[in-house]
Length: 510
Image 1 (tube, rainbow, N blue to C red):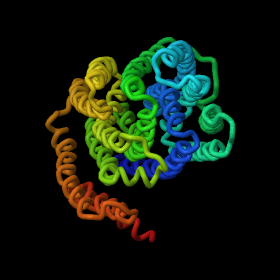
Image 2 (cartoon, helix red, strand yellow):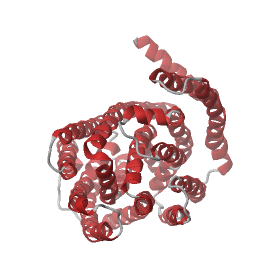
Image 3 (cartoon, rainbow, N blue to C red):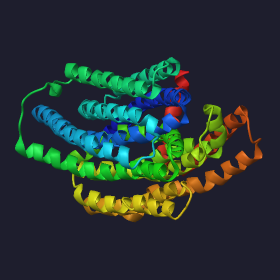
Image 4 (tube, rainbow, N blue to C red):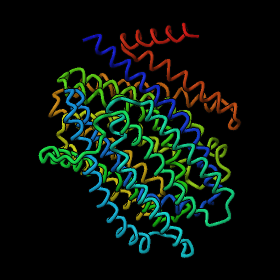
């Protein structure tokens, strides 16, 4: 038992390592690319790109849902070493994804154009470019749906190395596109949308070719299993409901900001989202590595190990994000001016509050993985989505009453905290753990770490000069050290021993 757990931890650590190398490269390249694109397109076209492209890109949430569904069934089959079932799952997943891609394509064709013409605030002379953006993103979305099946295979097999290389290739392709856009004289927004679509085709083809060559279950076959198709479609359907609510809140906020404040504020949200995505990847990559283990432990009926992993991954995921978020929130205005030549109004405040939201959201990720392992999504989705759906109308009311655009992100963070408490109680019906145990082992240590590190870091930040690159470096270094010390103090005895062992191994390699 102890040996198996150690091997699982080692596998998680190794896969997390691949994902973090991917994340660091992608983050650096993406942030630099965003600066070039903002300079090339200008604030107005950049805002149009984010709000119009976001109409189609918002459906990318569905690709996450589809990936999670396939991973769950693949992991169950891998746990049982059933190769015949693996082939059926993969081929039926492609069929399900194709049907969903067709429905989404038709929905965007009708609803997207209505929204573009009737609701969004777009200058008349940029409507042709906006339509190009919408169609290019829609085609990219359909390609992503098909490619999701292959991503799911890589993650289910815990082959994070190839998954990482594809992400890096995608980032550098987009950097090359940014430089092309910077120097062309044609309509830059249209050309950018077309080239991003071509890049999506290339990066979706890479894992497909690899999986067809390496994994036997990826051979395309005409298979049919009514009960398995129903299970896949039903499981995916409940995933889609949850992702649709997430999409509605995310893209709904973009539409609200556009309706009340225009495309310049959308540019601010677009930049803030890119900064936050880079930071969120620190914890998201960790959960990509952890998720297969949660599902496999449930498949093997190691429920206590599974619950323990859910508790621990909640803490670890939050810590990883908090260590990066804290210094960035303290120095966000300087970082934005260092990064961009022109910073739209509200960008700094948007970044801070989106980070607060995602610090809460990171605690929900293990519970989503747990309920997917159990396979009982109905009440989790219905109850949780009903709570989270409140964010959109509450945000609309706040803006209608004349409040600042920052308010919608404050509402989002508060509603997500309520959502966390609700879904914990839903999952508890199936896994029979103690809420007090979760509070003691996960939530309380997180609160203590934040309560200690925030004021200390705030004092350190205020004691240093207000501007300067080396001041930023000092704030980052000091807050990271403070966080690491406090987190180490809050760790369990076994966790401290594990950290000491890893440090010794690393020092011997130097």
